[in-house]
Image (cartoon, rainbow, N blue to C red):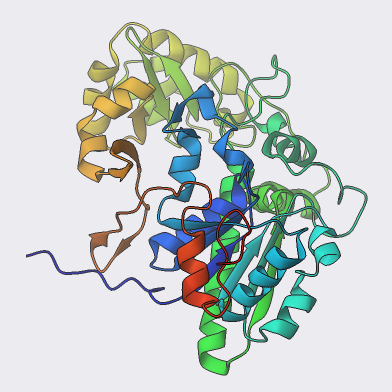
Length: 395
């Protein structure tokens, strides 16, 4: 019999005021760990993630990406500009353990749900604020969107070759990293609250998340101003690592090589020109020459052929899988990273939490909520003396 998982955040109430993507995913991480997460959404339209579709795909009236970000949550529709709705929300805030919001700076202050105001209602609350570029400085009011944060951070100049223009990462890396930082900050403040009773405020931004991603580059630059980003040839995968670090075409695909001694590769691949390069500086000074020799050699055989040779010698390498190859692989099946949830009879496949607790994976049972579907029940549970229906009428 499978042991029941005791999720670390069982019993905690999180109010999620955020919208696509960093805030909702931070709340999702807490939900997967056992917290009860209630989304506070605008009546009629809800979280913009319900309609902002990844690849244009939707299921059961909401985008697939919304389903992926909002499983394990409940939904209450509330117009924060309506005094009655705002009062209901304030009463929920008084009962909550955590509150997450990602509005632009100043919005929550105008409606009286900023940390200073919320702390007066609930002194022990843990309040998380995610923004685009922080609360100060010339960029504070710019749109907080992933590509824009990548652009401002300089990240797109770190990928591709010197022949390319800026190459942004093709996923919402800033949003996802920010979600991790916000969830980490919330759990740290919860630990402090359990020890001392003191709540607190955690803040971060898309820009800070992407700058933190570049900690090696920025730290090196800050200590040596001569450092510049100089991308290399078409096979190089890193502006600051020497050959053979990169990707190489084979007869039927691509192969990735990480840090490896050049002479050893020369012996394994029957390339005497590389076997003779015993000076460690050669990996830097003759980088593109080395990469060209490797590319020509790998192009003569299949990916499986070269992996057989390289893996046997414990060379750091891997196949570069396509999306279809990944999903069909035994490795993907073994890590068991998918799950299914159900809403209104529709089965929806998505990923699970990447965490394992006490040796067990964390799976979801509840699909993403319909807009406002839990409003009456939550109002009855927390505001039972004055329940209102979702259309705003007093019950």
